[in-house]
Length: 115
Image (cartoon, rainbow, N blue to C red; front, side, top):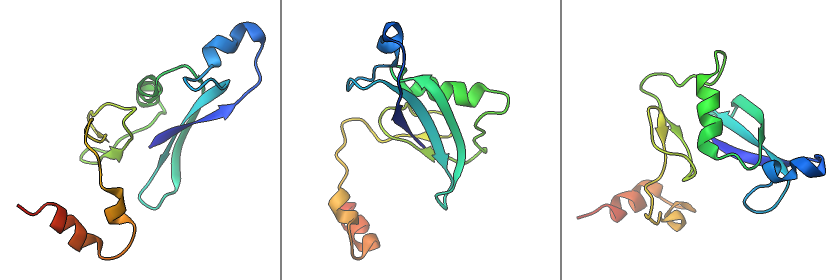
């Protein structure tokens, strides 16, 4: 699960609400993939200035919105909070991405967690 921005053209008086924290004029798009990386849910149209968590809350509370099966979790980035079915990384923890680049991933994982 993640969001992306799509640049849009809006009237000058509405630009502030569509302006992202990086300064572009965009809409916020939430997209969710399954384990096979197939899109299973997309919600577009929120103004770019809206926080990720607010868009997710809208997706979950819509009658035909995003459903998170009990006992399953969606992996999200740090822009979201942990919650039922939502798993974000711990804040302030540096993850070792280089360990995942190639080679024996299991060995490198076990090595990094040895006591």
